[in-house]
Image (cartoon, rainbow, N blue to C red; front, side, top):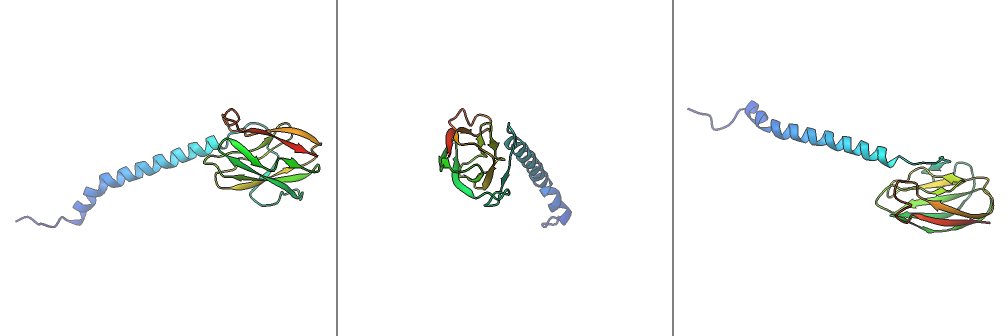
Amino acid sequence: MSNANPSTSDQIRSLQPIIYTALILALVGVFVAFLALDKANESGGTVVQAAAAPAPAGGAAVGGAITLADFSFSGDMEFTGTDFGIELNNVGQTVHNLEIVGEAQSDNVNPGESAVLDVTGIDPGTYEIRCTIPGHAEQGMVGEITVS
């Protein structure tokens, strides 16, 4: 006479392929996430400072905010003084940063996050800005700021 109810070990054995598949998919997901994070952290230039705090570590007042969208900058493009902070708000779907060419560069800012770029000792003038993430400047993520 056969038992209609399978034993616990039979039930576990029948779930093994599902469990192994789930574990493999989880490991692949973690690997892909690390690759994406590594790629997102690649950038050229010199990092000056960017922090998640609303004020720059150097103590300079935040002089304005620039929005980082997918392949464009908007917001305050005129700043006063030689030392100021720029609040960076990433509203895009990918990581971005902001470089004031030859002067300062932020760390990468993840989607939905903000940072402050601390600018110190900058002379009055017009400066090119760009995102240094590969391909972003070529897709239009460039602009100018004016410092007076």
